[in-house]
Length: 448
Ligand code: PHE
Image (tube, rainbow, N blue to C red):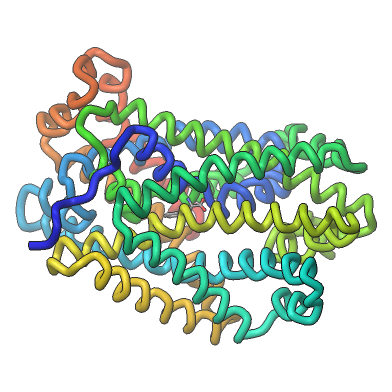
């Protein structure tokens, strides 16, 4: 057998790691731009509702199953199954979780690689190496490969150091830095011309834009942002002490994740309108705000360029923020296959990290060489199909297959009077019936 299982050393350590997983490109890039293109604050309201009504219950399913099983998703779902059929579906869901986590990481590492190259570019400018700086931001296969490799290497280094010395230590260092950078940037951007228009667009609800499509987009965003379905929260739950109250910690993670997404909007939307004031195009030809890679890779860099020399520092701070957000998320994705390999094959952590990391990097390489054909496909396969379907599977396991007395016993650890709380009155049937049906309804609608 391998070494004893890792564990977070404290509640703060768990909170840093799990909010680190949750807060990522999805919050700082995805959320604000979806708000901008979906009716401003109307989207914020819908998102808040869905985060608490759908994503939080599913998150609770993952955390509770994980802490009970003290193992990866495959073993955990097998462990709570009650016959050969549920054992089979547990294995299927567990392995699908592994696959989807790997696929998400394979595209995430490419995007995070862009963030590193855009961080390196102003640094090179500062050092006077302007040609190198231009190469860093120019789009080329070799540039993409190199920076994806650097990002994957960083992710692997942290994961190879284990739960406490790797995940917990780095999340605890990086998350406060992320917040500090974000507040500094907001303070600066809000003093610039045009920022108030951006703030208005962000905070002014246009409920006329509410539509099934918006609902779906908000649900996908909530699942992606809370890292649900692929076993990351499950494995982090499995490293959590039994003295902690799961419903409270889960609510805190949801609250912090939503709070940081909202705060990121106070940066991105005003920054876009500041860019417009200084002459940068922020609307695509279709009349919509530029939201895709063009936003982060063209609109904002153009803004930083127009700011003169302070722009270099602002660019460094902004892309450092993006890299940090990506890294605390990517480690949680890589931990999924690594924990599985350690626990299933008794492999050493370092070997398992090298193996899983290299396989995922190969998938990234494949995507880089076939970008047009693969990138969009893998993003939508893993986040629009994989995550919601796996979310349903986890709710079914927590709500129907797991024995109710065991579930209660797990929740009682760290929360003695749970039976008398509103949480216990609502959540078990909610996760059993309401969650799977709502997710399914939204999913079916999107497929049709
Ligand atoms: N929650 C991360 C983000 O918002 C992405 C993520 C998805 C992380 C799935 C882990 C698992 O960017």
